Image (cartoon, rainbow over all chains, first blue to last red):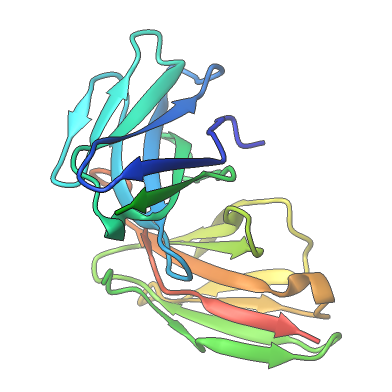
Length: 110
Length: 113
């Protein structure tokens, strides 16, 4: 019961912005949107999270729609090392538990 | 690197045996979560420990059990191993302040034959 929907795979050219969409149409008011990525055979890595407002850090930007039913993770200048599976996850603030879906396999091409 | 360590890295067991996996959490973190990740799938939540108490459990049978110690390190025990238990087992540590982000270890690859 992942509660998020992502495309199974995407390609992006090196140096371009990679935009990864996520649908979470049943999101509750107290659920945060988290993004993690997993490079092959490694443990997942935290990228960014948000509740209502758009967020930016040194790795990425997170754009959340006003109705909070979808979001987009933006990697502004993708490199080959950004090739990974990207997971969009909902976290309830009182629960601290992450329920994962299948993610999007992002392939960065030279 | 996150500072979360797991041991062993790889393990091969026979069906019916028991296994214990270990996780050392990042300094300052009091919460440990365990996940099972089958090949090609996202991690599946097993359970979470907060201050030595189980604090939430996913859809896993009782033969999956755990412990958290006073230094917040943790163990995952699996009894009566089945072939379907073959997977990457991930542990993640976090604190309940700030961003609630989880820091993952490299995982233990368990193969059951």
